[in-house]
Amino acid sequence: MFAALFSALASVTVPAAAVPAPPQSDGGTSAGGQMIPENIRAMLDAAIESGNDGEVSTIVKYARAADPMSGDAVLAIAQKWRADREAQRRQVIRQAGFLNLWKGRAELGGFITTGNSETKGGSIILDASREGLQWRHKFRAQADFQESLGVTTREHYLVSYEPNYKFGERAYVYGASQYESDRFLGYYNRLSISSGLGYSAIKRSNLQLDLEVGPGFRHTEFTDSNIESSIAGRGSIDFRWRIMGGLSLTQNASAYVQKYNSTVNGTTSVNAKLMGPLSAALSYNFQYESQPPTGRQTTDTITRASLVYSF
Image 1 (cartoon, rainbow, N blue to C red):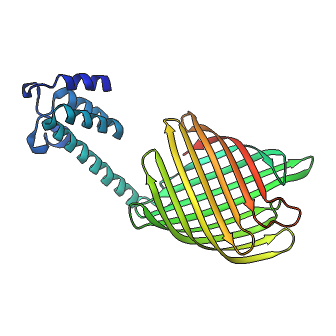
Image 2 (spheres, one colour):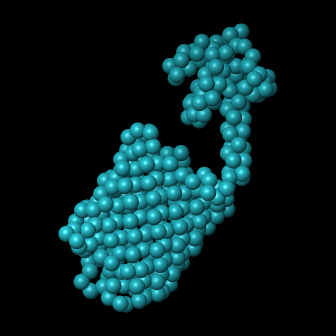
Image 3 (cartoon, rainbow, N blue to C red):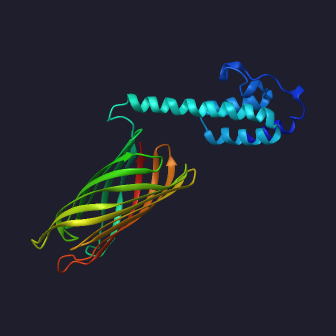
């Protein structure tokens, strides 16, 4: 497509080679009635019909460089298309119910652990999010379980929910609640809640970095019968990078710092698309507990190889 574009742009030398833009796509030539070369307009219409914003931007860029007068008309058409598409997106969100528009991934795979338990096992992870005009919702559920010779060697459960209220292009207020259970890390039940400010430090189509910080509260029932409840400080990092079409890297990390036991958790994951909604993922997770019960190690790690279904 781009080779044809360059050839078409090279042929644009005199106004006589131009024809009026077809009125059916945008109601006229736009941009003060400027005329667009027929072959350039055909490729612009094809890119718009495909919905590929990258191709539209490329055509606009080179059309304006070759012939600024008709290039302005090409830009105007592209801007109107983007505005119409954004208006349509907002209308769909306004009319959708809370159970609609959720996107996410379901992950099924195996793991290898080191630390308090050294074994192999399986895990199920569900990640989902819903992006609204002002509200964003994030949900995560995870279960790791392993039984060897009738003896359970790993049992970890987690459920979390985080609503975000966006009050700017990048800034938002978050609320976070999370329940965990992992007796091999030293606690039967742990409830964590937090609220604070978030900021999208990087926000591009292929690269995003979200930072969050705020106060929190944690209630933990340890395996040694000790119970601790205290105010905590929470911070988190959510980094996503689409390296190329089917390859992406994510890095998530969070920390609860408090008077008693503090926790740092982080996951690095590489995802490679296989076909359709299926992809393969390799991830590494670590969890650090500053003051675990006697006999427990401070750090556990998990390496997972998983099959992922995106929806």
